[in-house]
Image (tube, rainbow over all chains, first blue to last red):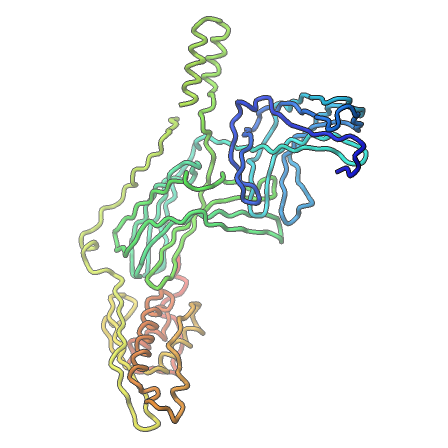
Length: 333
Length: 168
């Protein structure tokens, strides 16, 4: 910040090469506001240009170097000073010198590894951003641009159902079953509660989804529990032999994929909590962890269709056009 | 491996319910009535007793239909025993009404009809809440209170069943 009118300053603008075509994703920031950011996946190239616009045209801008960084970092709210960078790439754009006029610099970070998903939580946040810096003796000029990274998975090979018998001896025995142990974010939890013994007066039953964010290690571990959903599945008193169905659509809730021990700094896990409430408001519950994963919105081009396109290209015939069109149509379907 | 785009939301298969289970009496029948207040004794040594009738089909109770007579201080005894021995949060009793025990009142004090009725309702709510609690059902003091003719205040406190077996 310069208080004097002499001297030169500049504005930096970061523009991605594919700004027109790249999808944006909504993300809630620390203060609760929802904003849209460019969406990237692991391995994708991050390229574009930075425009440096001189504020006072005609005056020279002396600088100690211009660079652009791609950073992935974890910030713990109770330890704000320490940023844990797990990705740190830098490209020098200009050696120390001076700018006589506004200038544009191209940059490309090729096939950048983005191992974790962007996350903003109660006690921790993980973010990726580009930071362009014009270094100067007294104060640097810099501009940050946040991006959002999603980690995608495919349908797991093994996805066993969860089935268990629980209860209180001679009072309440139930058998609960959930059709899977791993659900994607737009999945449906299909299950049932089977009553084997009911000697208490149950008023209703609900299923809650609880998100637990764990930060810190060793002696200072913080758990933040948040009830994401409360869904009543039964109203009234059941008797032995009754089966209560569960059908819970996850797409309606704001959830992230399960994150386990991210860079040894934090975890985000999800639990299904089955709660039975009796006529005296006593609560009986059973918690069970589920794994959440993110499915790609659009079916990403499979290896086989890529190979087909590649093979067709060599032929250079009209049929290669239709193969591309066909693949494009399948992708958007 | 098939990649389904629409989730299968059909219900999971379940065993059909036995008709006697579906239409028979539920296994959680427990009703306790506190009624028929009677004033016993003369002059300063009077006190009120209430009839406590329990009807149940829970196997943990020896008698399926029992009637006993209890006074307010017996309910207090039960509350203290449960607070000491069990881990449950015991619901409150209706008030002790110490003011009503003082002399020179304009009314009948603790023998006032409206007060006795208020107390009766409170005691009934208290005992029903407690008796339905799975952990309280394991305490000897509760069984003695509900089903023994008189309270043996020198009894040996304990559990009716092995507490380890209770919770899964």
